[in-house]
Amino acid sequence: MQLNLPFPQTPRPHEEVWEQLSDTQQDTLIATLAQLIAKASAGDTPPPETPHE
Image (cartoon, rainbow, N blue to C red; front, side, top):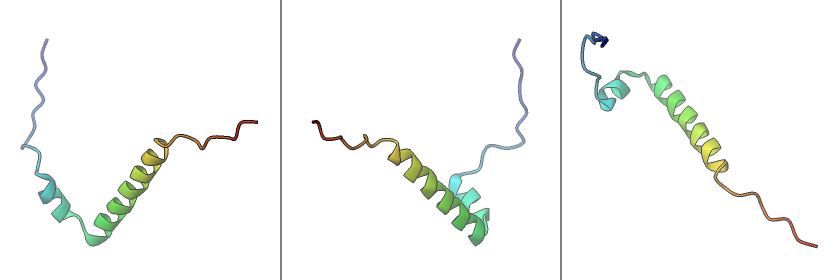
């Protein structure tokens, strides 16, 4: 069985969505993305090597 989902319109381009956000919403989104990127990149670095005795 196949279900069809009715979408009223195609998704809007990213630029159009961005322009609809207020300056505060844009600032919040940028800050949140920056935190997520920093968190994700911190997990990519190997732990520092401990000196071998």
